[in-house]
Image (cartoon, rainbow, N blue to C red; front, side, top):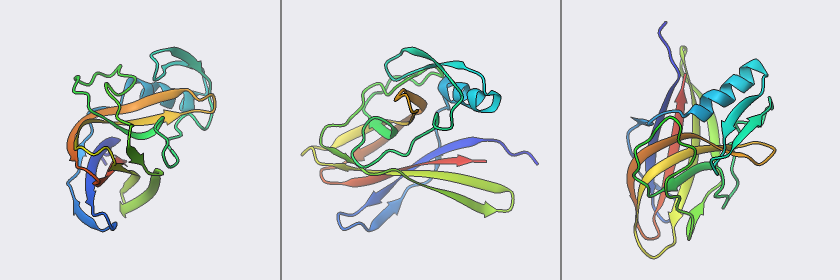
Length: 180
C-alpha cells in the first residue's frame, strides 16, 4: 500500500438561489507549510514547538487539542478558509496570505465532513462559501487554510495560489480535501 497525505483544493459555482451550477475539478494545493509540520509535531510528541503566527511572531506553542481549529463561524475573517488577491510565490515558511480580502465579502460558517470513498481511502473535506457584496468583481489569486488555538494565535497551514473570479453578488464554495 503506497498511500500518502495529500492536499487538494477546488471551487463550486453557486446560483443566487443556492443551486450548484458547476463543481470544478480538484487540483493539488500548493503546499502544506512549516506551521502544519510544527503543529503536527506538537500533537504527536506532546512537546512544545515554535510556531510562526499570522503577524510573523514566533510562539512556543504547547500540546493542546485545539491547535488545528479551523471551524470558523459566519463572518469570521480571522481563520478557517480565507481568500486574497496576492500573487507572491508560495514558500514553506509563509505565515499568512499576501493580500487578504475581507471587506464586503460574506464568509460562511466553515463546514466539514469525513468520507470513506473506498476501503483504502479517507477524505476530510473543509468547505466555506464566499459571496461578493463589493459592487465589483474580485480576482481571487490565493487561498489559505488557517487555524487558531485557545490563545487566539492564528497559524497559516496552507497557502495556495488559486485563480478564480468572484463576480458581483456571486457565491463560490472553496473546498479543501485532505486525502489519506
